Length: 239
Image (tube, rainbow, N blue to C red):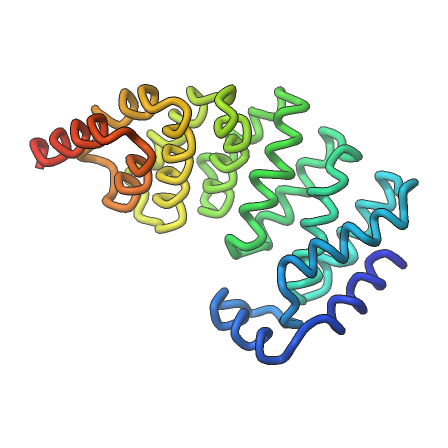
């Protein structure tokens, strides 16, 4: 409780009304905003964690749930940073908690780090949790569908992730009209393309006409010019 309350008090003092108004408008947020920058949130979380080297899993989860219960963007962002920085304390059975946070986050600013860094780390450490991602990928909540793909991002970015699973998810969502789904597919393809352009080209080639303009532009951005031109020709030919 003390960690959560200390974080809230400090982050409130670090904010400015001008930034709070700007950020609330930018994120189209219904939450209260202190107007504290992301670097200041991260720095404050890390400083307080250094002062609590013996933090237990139970204490971490209590701080996270206490912060998340506050209808304040910076409190929820601090809860995410706690989970990112001390994700090593989490166990496989904590993924339902993360799912609950994802369902109530309602903004990319919280969903993306929760999915990529927290859920993704758990799935890497406990591969059996991949079945949970399978369920998320067909959920009615588009934020969960986005999270199912972003949870695969970090290892894919390193060149050793599960592209087959991502490909299945992306195939099923390729006709989705939701901006944040189209953007996520293209984003991940772009990151994979930096290391494995042939993999991305082979996946996109038969789907060049189905991919939205956003997905196609993002997905081909990191490809060599010759492969990007080949995909553009295939897309133009198919109409």
